[in-house]
Image (cartoon, rainbow, N blue to C red):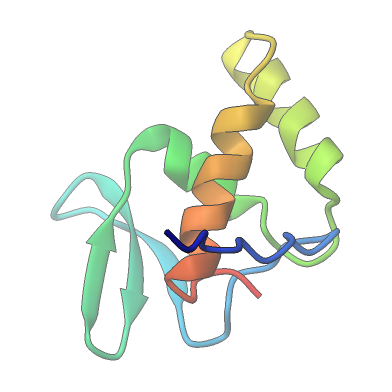
Length: 92
């Protein structure tokens, strides 16, 4: 059985230039647009990706989200979403 290696997340993750994050009033949700379609995001995923600007470090993103949602210990969920986004090409 081979193990799939997950590439390391960038220190300051940023949304790929192939994708655009925007709020769609018709769907009352944040979406990630790309040439072949669109991904509708839940609130937490949108808040994570909104902070992926290439300037904020992962620790800063986690700290901001913990303050926003008033919870501790969300780093594993943030990392998991960013890793999934990286595997899908959303994150550079």
